[in-house]
Length: 76
Image 1 (cartoon, rainbow, N blue to C red):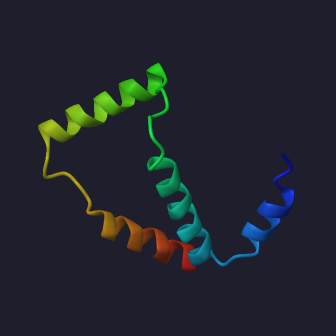
Image 2: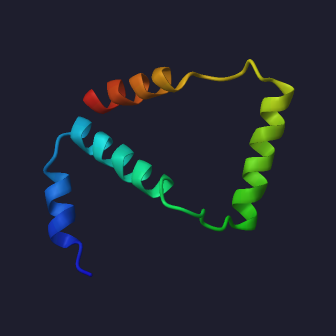
């Protein structure tokens, strides 16, 4: 499958549109039945992050704040 034409069209979108496309793509993957197998490294990273969160549950940044920061950086 040659993705070159599709990628060329995606690159022509502005940053906000590409972010929305990435979010929509991720949502479509997440809605598929079944989950992909995690590698050992991915599983260990998830466990490390969960342990960190259990120790310091207040040490989080709300998604809306993260998203706003990313969009602000992308607009520079």
